Image (tube, rainbow, N blue to C red; front, side):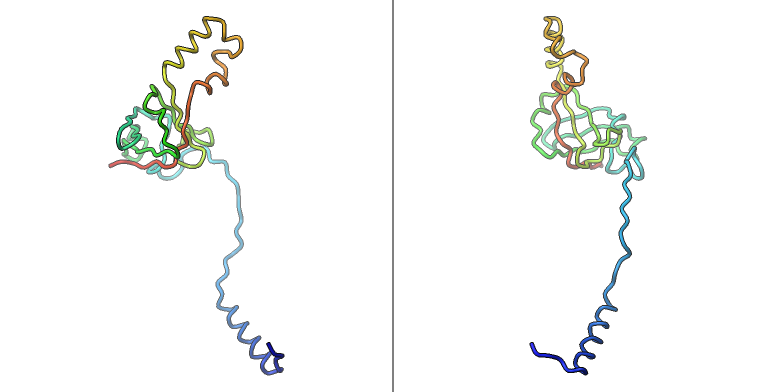
Amino acid sequence: MSPLSKPELDDALDARKARLQHVATLKPIEVRAQHWRNIRGTTDHCVDARFLRGWTWGKEGLVIEVAPRRHSGHRYYKVETVDDCRDLASADTIRLTARSGDAAVCGRPGDKLMMKDESTAELRRIAAAAGAAAAVPPQSHVSRLALERGCEISKLAPLP
């Protein structure tokens, strides 16, 4: 490093100014939080959980059937989960829940696939008859969660 003379400093400042004029800058980003309430826009990659008709579990994974009139003509969607979700093979019923609590399930973080089998519901009825329900009421939120298992959904995609 060496000190610059007046003409060298002027040239260096002019070169810097020229470089800065060619740098593209964006307008400041303004973040506005919105509460996501329902399906908006395309339903190609979202499922309205209220219109779930059926499901199958096989080699391809979980495939759900929905009302095609409510899902841009798509009847079947493949559901991929974050984990292996082995309990799905023994589940009698499933329920899709959105992270926001609404009907739209899009595979966003927090969307879940909840599973329930009738054997655990039968055990709850037996426990209620035996008097064990005093500790956990049969209709309580805690007992419902204890009898349902869930896996986080990572992706939903319509099938042809």
